[in-house]
Length: 438
Picture 1: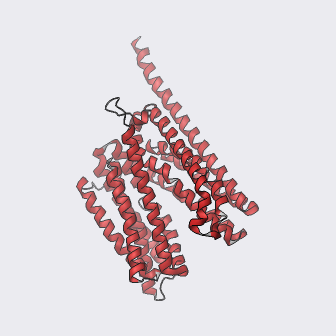
Picture 2: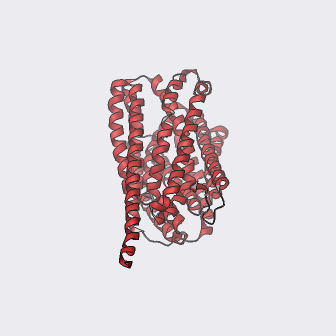
Picture 3: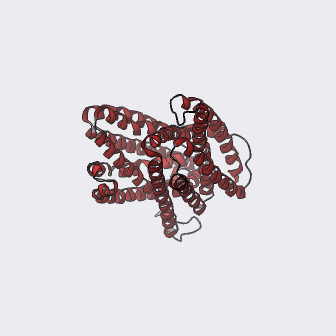
């Protein structure tokens, strides 16, 4: 399989790729588990009301962090993986966009959030606490993710995995110390603990990046539009993924929403197995893309086969363990077994369309990638709203499959069209010299 062949010779590299994938998967699984533990510690320590306030702020910052940097992290990985000499330029480009958008987002959210979220009765303390959460979850998180991306772009997955796991465990330790030992029970107090821990982590990440050299300050103009194309799908996807919760809250009871939300969380976690593969393969795809789609063809076939195989194994495993979930989450979540066993097969569909989307991204076709994601997610949101309103949970499941199947078909049709055009250009280029020789 071409995905496992060394560019230096025919010696197979299946073991190296497999080992890298296993490390990447383990990293994401450990990080996700640590995040769940962190949320559990915060929920127990802060209580229902304060934890709900914290989650309200995080819901806003989760959208803002996708805007921060305008997708410059993808530019860094794609360009540096293909040409390591561009590292200083790509880093400077990233830092300028991160600081600029981060400043704007912090100012806007710092002014807007105190108007409808109250973490403290004192206006000044409330504004400072909300600002601390915004700076932490938007700017500092982006700095930490930048360090991880730098190591990925350099092909040093061990360093990237260490940053990912270290970040997750540090957050868990901070929550355990603040809520478990110190007794922090207010979201406003936790905001400053969170800020302090993230400042330390971000500082360590900056030190770790210094070994690769200083940035060259400047904007890669062609990459700004590419970054926007890369960023917008995350915004539309977030909208689609939350419309079903909104509609269920209107037309269904809390038991259905609670069970569905837990099942949805497990399915989202299951997708990490295919995301781990793309995390490893994206730099390889970016390097191969320099030679055009005809040079990527064996790699694309291998990636698609691996992604589908991993998706099938993950879906089957999720279906098998579903009956054990109420034992872990409580008998009140027994309805989630049914929900989980219906939704688990969407992991295969996500694996299929994500494989094509990663190829488009690695080859710089972010406009096409964004158009498919954005249109698909907007249509999916509308379909989900209508079907959920009239059919309740069955409508949620039906709309989910309709959207994922539509995305899979659209992405692969677009990729096949681009591959055919690339092949026709290559054939035409080889025919012209032959005709001139005659």
